[in-house]
Length: 290
Length: 290
Image (spheres, chains in turn green, yellow):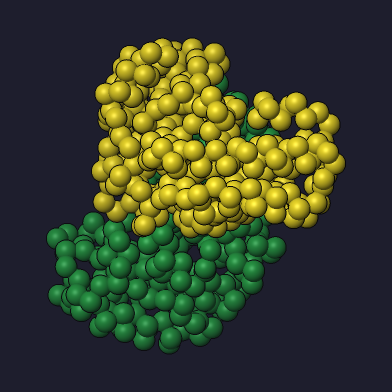
């Protein structure tokens, strides 16, 4: 596996691979890799003949009071994991090369960034879309692979790619979960044992909403209230948002029609966790695939 | 010459040309082409083996009270001119394909867009950087050529390309002028005979500043006041701005050091004209090249 730290070398290498006729798939990550990330890489592997992974903890997508400084990092462990799933190139730029003095450009996706996590993390999605634009221009992929756990991120990036004609196919991969249902996240490492137990409330709340929906409940407020009541019975939790919204526009719904996105952000202790699932009217079992 | 109207066809054609090893130079325009535009195309021709020109009057860079609707257009005349300077591909997308329903992404260059024309045309440069990002992603050039008459546009686009790692070489071409010194502009077509005479005040004001600078004047306020006094003696004029600023940051200067950008925007009748020149301490004759 090649390890590349320089932006210009990475860019030249990708250009060379494209000119040689290779198909490139790209998986951007912030490192501290878990099974969810590795699944993205396996999907990338199945779609292209060269796989590039980036590991970059992007400062501009963290708010001033958020966890940028203490975000978990494990360079050597990550490199071993990436190599273990047959990635071809691991790109590890440093912050000063990504954001040199004088940097002042932002890529924004207006409406989609204004919902859900965008409300509680102002500027977060501008940070995400800007760094992903840069990473796309540097790694020049044909395909880029993202997890569905960050549903809004996936929606925002898909919109950006369409709107700016980047010509990259964006692929979403179903959330990978621990045996008990907790969505994999690098931030799970922050949880102590009691918090880890309470963290299950996100999955339980989604399961409750799915059951109610399967039994015919279509009132978004009733679904949300039921999820909120379930979550608050778990210690150490505080709800950031519980939303039942349109899967395309992310607008809040009053009544659920054919389908809806259930999206949650809950603080457990000091750790903010997110999760989501799709409710689909026709065939409930499909929900499990998303 | 190929004429391409479809975004996806243009993108596929450029990808094909890149894969075949060609070097692509791109000249984006809003059409109603004049000798200044043709000079950009000749420079592009000298730098690459395939030249792509776009003609697109971009609605998002016009303010609500500006001249988008009446901006001059001449498709057939433009195509003949473009062909006359041996352009390979002319790309003419329509507005609905560039901005389909749901479009919501903006590319912004913060500080540089907040000076000069950015102050009197709020949102203008966001419109420019967003459409140029799109055009770059569609035409995939190695080199893009812009006129120095829109000095701020050139600065903003260069910054955007650097900041987002687009990997495109941006080339600036000296302003082409009418025999009497008026900078070529599609908007000169709006001027009646009396206004056309008054429009010379921009060039005269810059020449005055250059003479004063050559004689040792370094106080930006004195230079600006002298230019303003000269402009107001011309009928039908109203000054939007007269600036003496840093050529890199576009920040206003108090004292001029080695060099300064003189930039003007003046309404002559209802027509807003811009012009600029560099003042350089070492060798005044270089100024004429810019």
